[in-house]
Length: 283
Image (cartoon, rainbow, N blue to C red; front, side, top):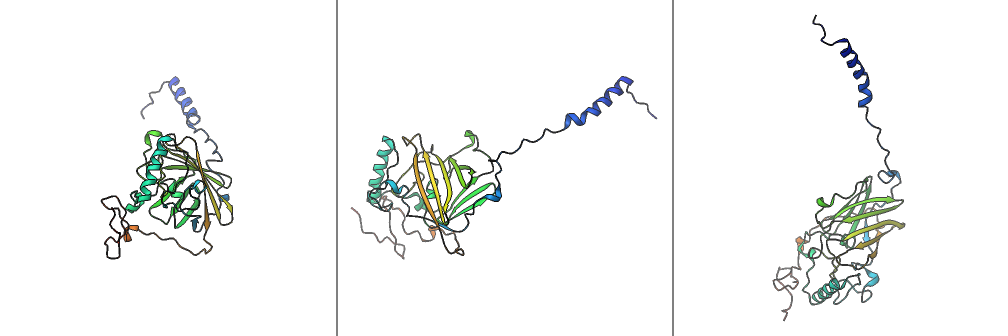
């Protein structure tokens, strides 16, 4: 049998290290999770079913001029806290809306509505509350907003790029969902409603959603934009629940019946069933 090459003092040292190894290698105890990171999922509110936006697609009804006008009415406008440069831009847009030469980017069919227009769409909504995430799903077009409520924050600034819906994270304060949104595309990519409201790509939105009564959801959006606004813009939206629990939402593509393309002259055309324009010639 081959003898060990360890000297007596070496053997003692080896035994000492072996005894200490389990202590040195023991993992540190995990830090307790904060309530925000992992709330009591059993107490999440029930927002199931189908919902519809109340009051039409005017984004800020409180400041609409004239009161009660639809968003596409000639010279109708709202009063966001624009600075002088963006107010001038909005006034020019209003003129184009009035003469029919301001196209809605959604008319291209397939373009997402973007934030905050996601909260201002016709047709049905679904608000999906689940552990770790919240989803806003609109039947109108390819519009899905994902909000991560599992405790994560936004990615680092150098990993954020502009998208239509932006990057959203959230947390629960009791029965209120607080959503923080950044990284949205700005002016030139989407509008907020058909009066031509736009923001810059520096827009930051904080949305607080809660059930204010059975069948009534409220969303309070606080929008800050250091490029376009002089102060925060606060807009409140309401959604009513369809009473028939068996109603279903379906997808559709506006390209299937796109009868309002924009012509080469910048005017919106209306096509008849034969695919030919039915508009009268414009001067």
